[in-house]
Image 1 (cartoon, helix red, strand yellow):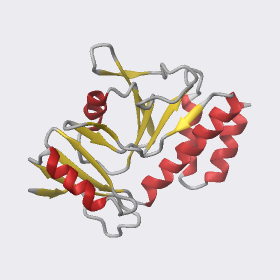
Image 2: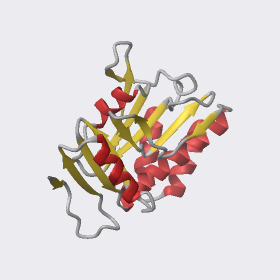
Image 3: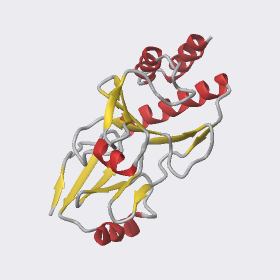
Length: 200
């Protein structure tokens, strides 16, 4: 069974989600194979559900801007970072996702320290629990003009954070970061200038 969660008037500007329920890991792998040469399609699997996600323009604008601001922050602060982008994070037979952005900080690791999810349209797989299952230390969600941070606790469940617990990100001014992301929707150049000025 397939459920379409968002039906756009214009696929260039609006996200599209297709949710397949009661699917096996083997069926998910078959879909992965079918989409492997299709640019701009991201797949997720968790709890027998498969999401096929095609991001729209606004989603990608926020995603790219967040990536740009992170690059500026790391470079100006002299923090070693390794951007993994939308590299598939997977626990074989159980969970798989392609983050909007992901980073190893300080050194390269098997799994990123941080994953970023941009939410423009609702629907799809419950991604916080999926990231818990994969053991990603922190996940940040950008939704409705707000950045919400979650960190993985010792018992394997995420809790909401007021500030990042990752070394190197603890002194990031989240208020400035959010304001610059919002400004970037209409003026990316001004957003970058504001962010750099705020970093001193």
